[in-house]
Image 1 (cartoon, rainbow, N blue to C red):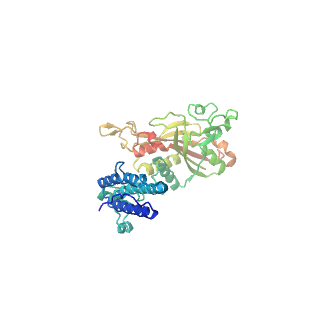
Image 2 (image 1 turned 90 degrees about the horizontal axis):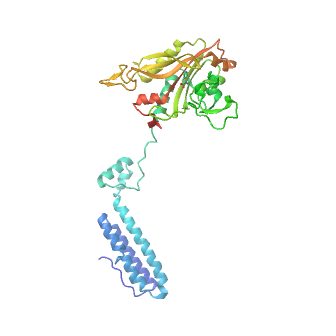
Image 3 (image 1 turned 120 degrees about the vertical axis):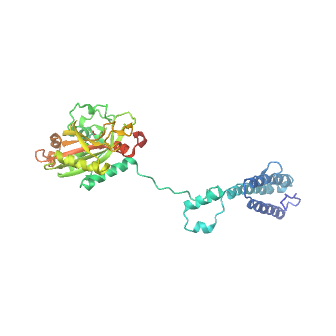
Length: 379
Ligand code: PHE
């Protein structure tokens, strides 16, 4: 028989306690029977409806009618009942929303993910008390992945990895790389300078390195020839961001110094590296260029690995190579003797050693490799 709130005549503690415990046992009993949304609503209203809900009746029948001496105690009991009812109503809702967990299955080898998916399929509900689905920590960023690939191609050729600071001095970024004092690259057009450096002599002024080439000098200061290094790292230029420009991007520099290094070594090394990176069928091709720190200098192109060098993709023009069949990949050249002069004391006598250097943009290569058409998507 359904529970009804009795009228209290006996307000002794024992009678009060008995009444409360009968009420709470009815509450627990009814809460445990709630199986769906509509049963829950009925349950909630029966106990909590302002008009004639069990709580309202308790208020009327037990509290209002209580003699003065026991008002306080009766009030405390009613508050307790109110809390219990609220908890039971909230608890009943959570309980019917969660599929009943067969303990045997929880303990079996079935994975959390399978189990939750299964339970969800059966009930259309998710057990919010189970641990969430753990996701793997993440994937390597495509630019970093590309840099690792490039670095590892050169490591297999016996190159070591060197790194240097992103905040660099004018000396390493420009002066020791044979940039004349008024070279346009030193202008704020291209370079992001650290503010408040005017009081210092120019060579000590700080800036965000515009290329990884300063690490050539830093490494040659520390290590005697022969030297074979690759230098991955962040660089900055004062370029407004667009689909192919970002004020921060990544380069991979290379430097090889030994006796009798020739332009043939440069070509052979880079041709091998491009085949390792883009596939054995790519061809390389060099065009004369200029960098203050290499002489002669060149830009290297690889045959377009998207259209196979034809400049077309079916009826469409090939965009990545601008229909030329060639993609510019890097700048390179033979180390200028003027650069060796800055580190001559450490064994780099330009009369005795020679070397080649190259630098490529990792972001651009990642864009091409993964067919991404906007560098901003990488940030
Ligand atoms: N540092 C040059 C650049 O950023 C690239 C380069 C590196 C060219 C090494 C020649 C040799 O454009």
